[in-house]
Image 1 (tube, rainbow, N blue to C red):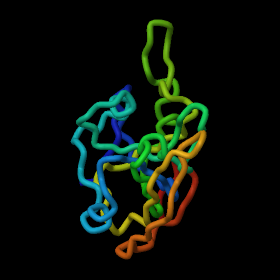
Image 2 (spheres, rainbow, N blue to C red; image 1 turned 180 degrees about the vertical axis):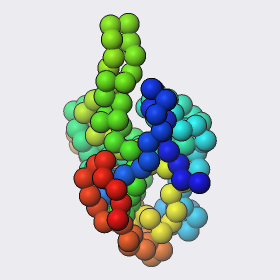
Image 3 (cartoon, one colour; image 1 turned 60 degrees about the vertical axis):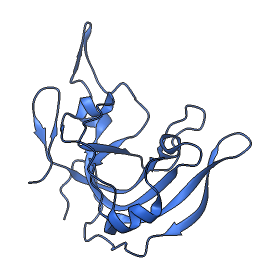
Amino acid sequence: MELKAKLPNGKLVDPASIGIRYYGTDKIHPDLAFKYGIPLKGECNDLYGHVLGNPDSAFRGTTERPVISHHQEQGAIYWAGHQGWVYTLGLMQGWDVERLLDGLVPTAGGFTGSPHLGELECAIDSRISPQLIQGANRVFKSRRFLELGEWIENKNYQQSKLKSCAIGGKAQ
């Protein structure tokens, strides 16, 4: 069964093509990720709960670039942290968090969206097979910011048959 994201209004949303993405973590070494993939994290399909940090989330956050903002510490590189890993993922299916939550999150003064605007996060299924991982970079601390180290290629990567299209479109 394909994972669907549940929005705050109860609507279930299919994933869309989101292109190449970056995922950062300090918990999974490339030796394991390239051989076994990145394991299922949880089973909860509540997209807003994912954004709030639900440990049982069925999603993992990804960004369109390794760094969104050094000054605001946003992006996969900052999710990985010093000595963590940033994984480059091939063409992916997922959910544009900011777009999908916009105007759906109830507050005392009306409705809002994602509390992490500007992060440019797309959520993906938390289980990432090794064939979807292009490679990884170790994160190190330079004089001022976190940076990516040497690229490690995943020999098990298989280029996806998906074609990248606009968020909200259907994968082909």
